[in-house]
Image (tube, rainbow, N blue to C red; front, side, top):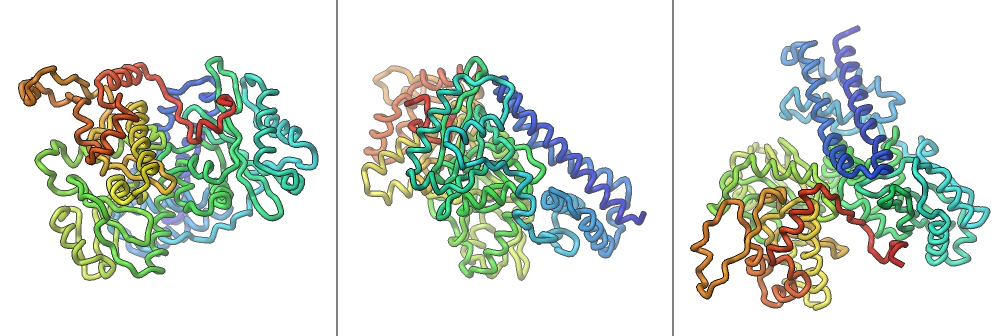
Length: 567
């Protein structure tokens, strides 16, 4: 066997081993769900995220033992890719394997070369959606009654625990579907399809599919939960595309969904949610490394079809990050500055650690997912000179310029949102303003209940989505709730009494929050009226005590009005 063949086989073997490890953790989601092992569920999320880097390090080490990497000529690496491509014939996860191969090459060359001859900048072949569709779908008979179809679904997806009250749940489901679809629509249904893998996340499990009619397709999602006695119940039947979009939102933790055909699952989901990019859906399933690959390909495609230029992102400039965007594209790019303002008593490594903490935490629909890149390349002619000057002034150690490119040695990419401070300046509707302020308070509270203290809670550090949901996106001062001491201000007529306090580095005075979370008096009053408890030490101590016990909160990604138990 020639050397390129040996190395290609070794890399594929490393990927397969990594995927089996990943799948083993994913399959365990069902028993954790059934037994209510919520702490173990969150630990499994963290462990699964670490698998990729560990597997990559192992295989790169093996390759260094097999060959003298830097003594190989360019043709060796071209041959290696060719051999690896042949090994991927009929491989059910070929696209993930190509990304793993890219990671190996990136690690060997320290991410200095992006060359389609030796790595998969473009995929080796087009993914033919539908080729394995029958392997990921269950189809249900629609010629009988709605009740019979629901019974068949619950009988197909088996759990090792009893239902709390299956008859009641079937009745709820029947009522919900008849309320959503008219008699004529129900009569026209030609198929009901559900993905075979169950989608587990936190304290919930989802059966995800669609109702197919001649003129339209409706999402069909059954949300399942367990009670304190480890009995199963149907919590909601969701049939609106917006509900499905929020469930697969970018501010939520990755699903555990066991499948050998991730490409086919993503393709099906993309048909249900065509406004979401495929890279977002891969990420939602936990394949965040491949999601980054698909994002980069999508980004290159967008560059080839657009002509606008990269510029500073709108909003108040941050003290830690330089942020810019391409106006026609839906992400922002964030680079850690070389020096921070004196008020920021943190280091570059601390900032990176904060972003890692968010990556492995339950983001509860309130913290944007971020994706880390090294040596990210932009065509220089597409970057505004003013932005280049700004980056050289604030982030010079992270920037390399050539005649053709701006190379960013380290950056984060995040979904673009409207900064909340800009939204409140521009929005004149009092009801929408009130909703945004209410969302801001809820966002802070839910992050805290997920055991994260947001730190810098200025409203400029929050964004608002098109659906009106407020999301936190500035992580340089976050920490665990246990790392802060929440104290009351002294009672005194002296306005400078705070200066006489012995203030420790971890002390926080919630009564001061009203002075800086939002600026305008009208917004301050709104926040105090809606979430005044945020300004009391008692509230934060209560949440701190709750998180200390390891209590895991349940943050359902759909409105309470959709929940059957609430009716």
